[in-house]
Amino acid sequence: MSTVTAVPIAPVRRAYVLWLVAGLLVALVAGIALARAGDTGILTTPSGLRYQVLKAGDEKGARPTDTDVSLVNYEGRLVDGTVFDKSQQPTPLPVAGVVPGFSEGLKLMHKGAKYRLWIKPELGYGERANGPIPANSTLVFDVELQDFLPEATVRQLQMQQSMMGGMPGMGGPGGPGGPAPAGR
Image (cartoon, rainbow, N blue to C red; front, side, top):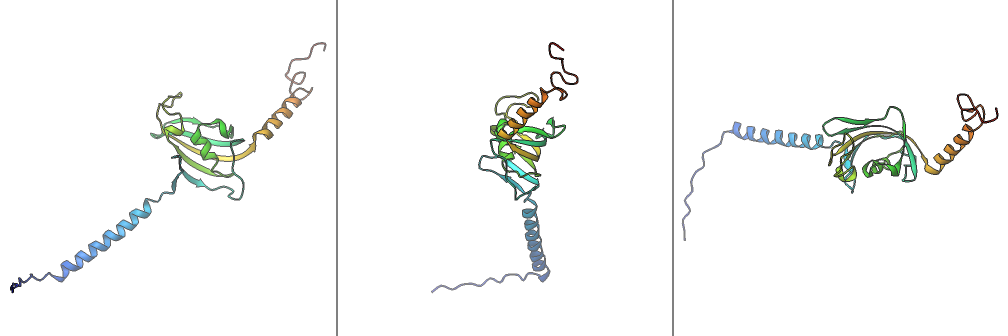
């Protein structure tokens, strides 16, 4: 049979225990605050497109598809803040006619929505430079979707406009400012 020798532990002051508990509580509160601050509302799609909804828009309405032409205001920047493109007015863009990340972002939006998109190089211009955009650049776009129409409707409107442009008095040939047809 062995004998256990008891070694007395020096008593700890109550103030030290209170400081320890207070420190743990402060650390817990700070951790919760940091966790909440980290929730910036930035979402990531399965393809890797990152986006943030700045303004939701009409969530009951439809979203554009690849066969639509969107009317957007946008500003494109590099991650260092350098602006490489900016619309001066609402600009029509075919949804399928832009870089894949921009197209994917448009298809997430409703009319009136404003999003910030972070387009990784694989969804942008990739390994090739494009004007002021260096190769392998992440693109940052602020995009506001004003409206969108099916491409067939846009073509029909363009045809009607071109047909009207050919009539005298409508701004086309023979109209004000246009060349006069032969024989006049």
